[in-house]
Each structure stands twice: as structure tokens, then as C-alpha cells.
Image 1 (tube, one colour):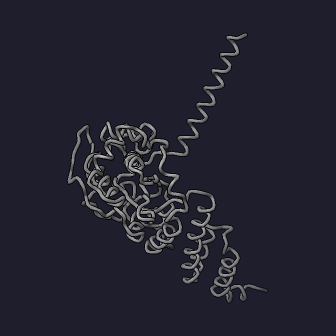
Image 2 (cartoon, rainbow, N blue to C red):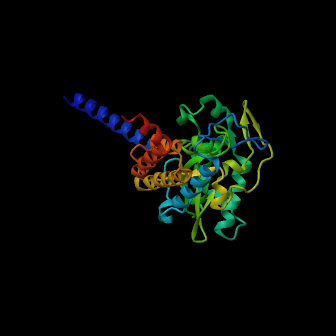
Length: 323
């Protein structure tokens, strides 16, 4: 009996561990969107823009979303402790952070020093990106200690290592996610990319009494490809080091982190789309709204608009056919 009880306990523990592990990985997904090449030229055959929604409107919607989602309403103290993939209590990471920031006088310069170190010492793993193409993403090296040892990863690994180094230096740092207009896109905001699911990760850092955005992955030209480490031009620059929300919105869209935030984001999309289509005041525009928001907030107004346009176009024809 004792043996059977032990076996049952072991099975139960294994099930609980599996459930816990699955829950953990769901909360901390791995993203893998590499930046566009430096010489990338935007072409029109890689994406589909809906004719009813111009790219300029999609870009405006992204900017409005980002302004709503950032800065986050969170406590900086909540982002100093170790977390999944962020090993800020690891002695090797603590020592490295001290070495990198030894000459820095404030937290902002420490963040910049760690940004420069990451951009010139960690290689983006294009072999893993192309081999998996988004599948089996949990096989990627993303834990901060493993990234440090392997010297390569995808964007989640960059973000985790950066968070670990900064937290070990006493600087609050979040790993955040959203959509980046990288290699899987055409590099432009359009209706298709506006609805794209999360594909990229970066960081928000609390310095000088505010949260600032940093994306070390896209400021680096270090590439691991075909089994070879290629430094490229190393540090591309500082385009994604503390950018304005306007500049960041050109190719990044933040994700809301809770149901209320996600609903606000959906309301922003619907408001912008409705206002644009209502100004056009065409039957096609109203039909498009009803297609994507069949029971939306403006559905009654939309039906009224449809009836009005139908009457203006077909009113005389209907009158003639009425006996």
C-alpha cells in the first residue's frame, strides 16, 4: 500500500508540475521578430492594405494605442526581483553589470552602457529564427544566463538579459511585448499589420522618475547565421534607446497587459475606423464597418448610414418598381 501511495503522490506531483510549467510558459512567451536589414527597401507586394483603410490611418491608430498603453500604471519596485528568464540574482550577471556600469554616475548612463554592451556582444540568432519560423519557440535560448553563455538569442533573450543586468544594478526593468515591423512584415503599418498578433519583445526601464523604452535587439547588427558569428556594424545607433513615443510608434505597437487595457485598445481602433469611414459617407465604407464590427459601438449609426445611402442611390428605382 505504501508503494502504491508513493506512486500516486509522484504522479500527482508530476501532473501539478506540468500544469505549473505550462502556466508559466504561457505567461512568458518567446518572441522572435528580427529587425529589418539596414538596406531594406519597402515594397508593396509583401503586405495587403485594405482599400477602405489607408496606411496613414493605421499609423495613427498605432500611435493612439501606444499613448494609451505607455507609460504603464505599475510600481517600479515590482520589477527589481528575479523572474522567469531574468536571473538578476545570478552572481555572474551581478559581476558583469558592475563591470559594465563601473564608470557610470547615474541610472540613465548605466542603462545606456548596458544597451551598448548588449548591442555589441550578443548576436541575433537568425539560424534559430529561420529554422523554426515561429514554431517550437520555447527551444530558443532566452534565459538570461544561457544567453550570456551562448552569446546569441532572439529578441526575448536580449530583453531578459537586459532586465537581469539592470535589475542586478538596482534599476527597475520590465520585459514587454507587442508588434514589431520586422522581417515577417512589409515594414509599414497597414490594416493587416495593425491586426497582427504579438511577435516582438523589448524593455521598459524606470530611470529619472519615469519609464523609458529601449529595444537593444533592433539597435544591434550582430548576426549569428549559417553557424557563423558576424559582427556586422555592431551598434547600429540609438534609434531605439529612449525614443519618443511618436518615433517608436513608426514600427512598434505596444500590447495592453489586461482585459481592460485590451478593451480600450479595441475601442481606439473602432473609433478611428468609424470616424474615417463616416467622413467618407459611402455605402462601401459602411459595409466595411459592418463587416469588421457587426455589432460594434456605432452599428446603429452605420445602419442608418447604409439606409440613407441606399435610398439616395436606389430611391427612384424603388419608387418606379412599386405598384
